[in-house]
Every structure is written in C-alpha cells, then in structure tokens.
Image 1 (cartoon, rainbow, N blue to C red):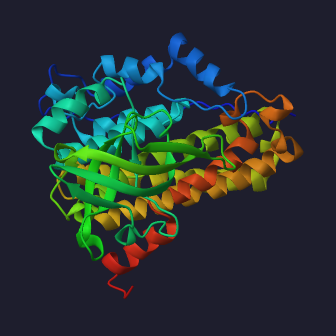
Image 2: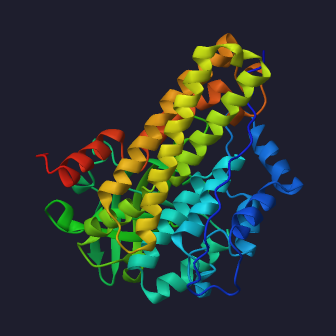
Length: 400
C-alpha cells in the first residue's frame, strides 16, 4: 500500500465586491478562474517538480507566484496602483484557499503578501508602499519577518534586538531566530527595541537582507522548510522605519489579528483530509462503519472551521476586525491538523512511515510528510496556547 495521498479540492462560490475593480466579474467566476489557472499543466508541472526536490532543498520564489502577479491575483485586494485589483479580503481569501487546496507551498506568499505587505499598507509611507508593494504583488521578490529571538519566543514585548540612532540612520543589532524563507528574501520586516520598557519601546523597520552586516544561517528541523538564524549589525535609513517610533507593538497586534483568519490553515487541513478520505476509499476501507463515522465527524469539524475562517475574513471586509474571532479561527483550524494526521496514520498503517528518503515521491503528499509539517500550523502566527489566552482574556474577560 502506498502512503502517497491524492485529493480533489472543494468549492465555495463567493460574491465579488467591487471597490476599485477594473472590470465586473460574475458571481463565482473569480474562484473558477483561479482554480482553472492552478489546474493548468504549467502549474501542475511546477508543483510536481518542487514535490520531488531532494532532502535539504525547499521551494523559494515560485513561477506560479509571478504568474498570479501578472494577473493581479497575488495581492488581489491591494489597490491597483500597488499591483492588485482593488477587490476585497474575501477575494484574497479565495486565492489563499485555492493555493492551499492545489498544494502550492504558501509560506512565501503568506510572509510576503499577507504579512509584510499588510504592514506596509497599514503603516507604511507612500514612498515605502511605492517601493515595495508593486514588486511584491508581481511576485518579483520575497519578503519575510524577523520577530522571534532566543529566549523570547512569542513574547514580542521582551525583544532585545536594538535599533539606535547614528545620525540620520539606525543601527540594528541583535539576533533573530525561527525566521522562514530569509535565505530567499530580499527584505525583512524587523521588530527592534528603540526605547526602554515593554511593548511601548518597539519599532518596525524594513531591512535589506543583502546589506553588509546581515548573516543568515540555517536552523535545520524536522520539517522540509528550514528555519533561519539571522544575526544583525546593520545600518538602515530612517526612511525604512515602518510606522510611528516606539509604537510598533500596537501595529503588530493589529496586523496579527488580520493575519490569523485561518484561511490558509483550513485549506491545508482540508486538502490533507480529502487525501486521506480518497485513499481510504481507494483501499476499500470505507466498509468499516467506525471509520466512516470518524470521517463524517471530522469532515463536519473542518466545514465548521471553514465557516469560522470566513467569519474572520468578513470582519476584515467590514472593518470590524476582532482579535477574538481571529484567534478562535486560528486555534480551531490548526488544532484540526492533529486529528487529520492521526486519521491518516490509521488509514495508511505501516506505509504511512514511508518518506521520500525511501523513494516515496512528493514529501507534501505523504502521511509521514504531513506528520512532520502539522505542528508548524499550531506554532506559526501565535501558538495555540496564545490563541486560547486571547479568547479567554479578551473574549471571556478572564484574568491572564
């Protein structure tokens, strides 16, 4: 029995808002267009190629990103002058969901567009937006984030990396860990301390990762996409400061709530589940009533997670972002990954331990591959424990 999984994606028609849209689109057309593009032979071939990368190699900037950028779809909800189509957050969620369902690696897209691009749209100057957003929207280069530090983890208020003035420039000194895609990125959004205190002393900067004084080293881990250890002793211009001085912590909290809709996570979990279900059917295992009931129950939970994710997206479009709604969606959808992996192991049995080191193609398509990848979902963009704390304190009014 093979441990390689196959799946068909699901559909969800969406209505199409029209803020600054160049041309009207009929109901459901946009999702169909994106799905058709991702099903094209060129894209499927690219997915096949990076699925067969040798151990120690991972995808960086993909041709599929550039092709999406040519259509204005990579950052579809950005203003037209910055490379988007001026559509809504729900349209951007459509792209993110379809990327996940198609099996396109999404880390670089999430970092560049959904995080760094979002920060620049919210807090960047006109010059910063004009300089960075169009090439990001075209998929010409990648950007990443530099937040976590040794001994700090998710407590961004305790950062020790400093930014000190040297004339009209800033010298950023410190060490960042667990950054992803830094080896491929040209720029990073870096959080640094500019004043004593906790969150009130944090400022954000765009750092050129190719500049002298930036050293990037790999942190190898159990997954196929490495983390990076980034050491900084670099000068940046004051024009690279993003947002108000000493007020980066407030911007971080706002953007994190926008980032945690859970759309990308639920799409990945859905893809994995559909693959497990299809494999069980192919192997004739659906004769087992207990397994069928287990599949139905988990399928229902994943559908519920999708509703939570789109509730968070709708809040973004309504301009009423609620960190509790976002945290709830992020927690629920990423915790489902564990249930899907447990089901996958039960369905595949011993074959589920096969890896591409054993000649099994496509690490993203194997049970063993998703077993190693799934913990990342619960850790990235805030751990499950942090999400529960947000719900408990802000949502239920419990003491921290």
